[in-house]
Amino acid sequence: MVESSSNVKTWRDDVRAAVLREHPSMLARGVAVELTFVMRRPTATPKRFTPPAVKRPDLDKLTRAILDALGSAGTWRDDAQVIALAATKRLANLGETPGCHIAVYPVEPHQ
Image (cartoon, rainbow, N blue to C red; front, side, top):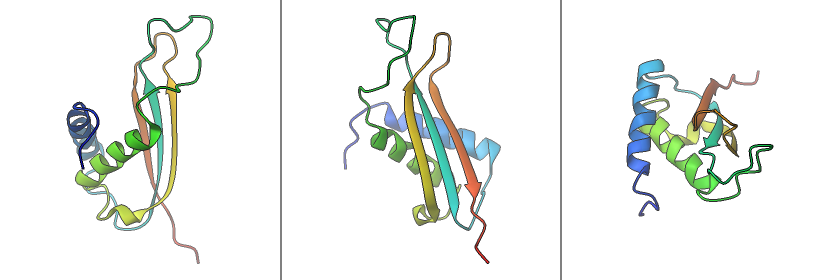
């Protein structure tokens, strides 16, 4: 498999470093993951409103890159432990820093 962007490896490495710093070896059970991608605001974007982020990269590719980075950081033992996933992509508001907000929660077993 070939990545469509040469920046993905650097991005994965950055995510991995942040996870290892914040959550060393987190879980061995099911997890829920929430991802909010804040995309760089193009200079031609109107200042009065923020349109939807309908251009590349695709949300599924962004999500896969983050999940791969989280897995390689040891957040879980196997990708199969991700049992719930919510992902959104939007353009940054004026003055907002682009990036990805990541939340990983343990899923409690049902009794």
